[in-house]
Length: 249
Image (cartoon, rainbow, N blue to C red; front, side, top):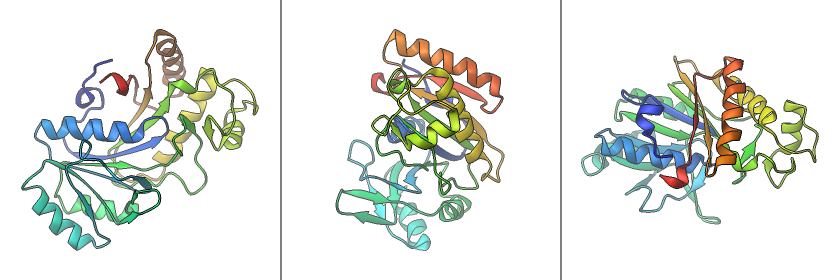
C-alpha cells in the first residue's frame, strides 16, 4: 500500500517518535525520515538499543560520539548540509552495529531544539516478526510524542516458537497461546496492546499511540491485519491502527 506516513502517523508538527515491537522497525524509521526530510523537516534517526550501521541509502551521514555537547555541535554542522542524518554513541565491530543513547540523553537532545523530529528505534527483536518485551524493555524516551508498535503480519499462521517470536515463552504467558500453537489475530492483538500499554507508562509527555501492521503484502495478510485492527480498536489502548507494506513503498 502506498500511503503517506506523514498523514497516517500525524507527523505535521514536531516531536519524538519511538518505535517498538518487531517486523520492520528500522525500515519504518528510515522511510519516515526520508519522507519528513523531503518535506523540509530537520530529522535525526537514532536508537536506545543497537541497529545495523546505516547505509548511504538510509542516512547520508552518521555521527558517533558519547558526548551530548559534541553531538549538539556536530548536529548543527550536519544540518547545514542535510535535512536528515543518524547518530549513536559507539560503533560495534562484529557485527557492524551502531549503539545508541540512553533515553534521557535523547530527551536532553530534544530539549536542545536542534531537530523538528527525532526518530528512535527503542526496541530490539533479533529480526523476528513478533516479540514480547522483557522487564527492562523497551527503552522509550520520556519526551516521546508518537509511540509506534510494529508487527510483522508474516508471523500470523506460523508456529509460536523462538524461530518466529523473540521471547516466545513470554509471548505465550502474555497472550495465553500455548507454545507450539498457531499464531492468530487474537494473540497478536493482545500482545500488541500489552506492549503499547507498558511502553506508554514510561512516557511523561502527551503522546499518540499507533499499531503499525507491516508486511501486508497479499490479500490474506491484509485480511489478518483487518482482524487484528478490529480487535485492537476494542482495547482502547491505541489511537490508530495502520495496515501497510513497507516493502511496496
